[in-house]
Image (cartoon, rainbow, N blue to C red; front, top):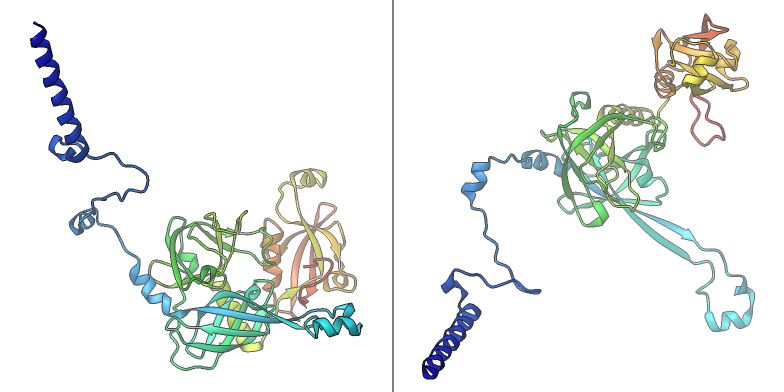
Length: 389
């Protein structure tokens, strides 16, 4: 009996040893796979072309190929004169350090994007991309570079127009942003972080975004297409490759894209661009009032039926509104028979008026309607301590 158990234990030991060797070195013989450990190269099964066709994925490569040649990189440089070091008048200091602290000039560089909008060499971009630049250089998709001059800027929409003197430039086709719907595919094309021309895809998240504090006249297209520093001034295009917006800003707590980007609609950009090319600047109407939205509490205080309209909170001394008899405390409810709901809509209506012409304002004073004839003035350039519209 003892001999039998000795033979049995030896057989079991040999079997376990063989099983250990097989599972360690040839696990496939048992239908097993080796356990992955850190640093191993994992073999991934690639999906075949037939599987991709079966899924029937769409592609926006035609839109990208159509728009990319018209999107450029913009490089700007600025010379900064450093203050003269106070020790430079000390002969001993100058003996040891020479002139290296003698108010030398320092060059800083930044980058952005732009869109070629005509074969004549006009490039549309953001004002904040070029507003402090001493020199501007445009790099085209093919690698060519050329210096650019500023034709004109419009800080209140954050737009600028440049001109490059070179021939045979591809230009982008303008689309109609009014035809966009929430959920439509869009592509953002630009030069994020200076890595080179990049295309990102997303959808239209919202339209008509305003009150963001980005610019004075806001009517942004919101998208979740990745927009990062360097994309500013680049193109937002629809699924056909047509320009529907100029990428302008992102909402971010870190400086990177969080999926909330804003683009200036191309119809607004086109209007500003054409006026800048024609006259060198943008002229808007102005009546000289400071306004405030009507809250439910104000509506109750003034016994108003709705919160539509704006409260005149201030009148510019000597401005068009004061000359027409508009007073602080009046409620402005319509401009040229067009009613509006808030100060943003009112601002756009006033800006669209032709300076020098007369316009009719409908106001409420002591709950009585009153029509006021006013001669529209020219909106001053920004940089005022108070914002009179």
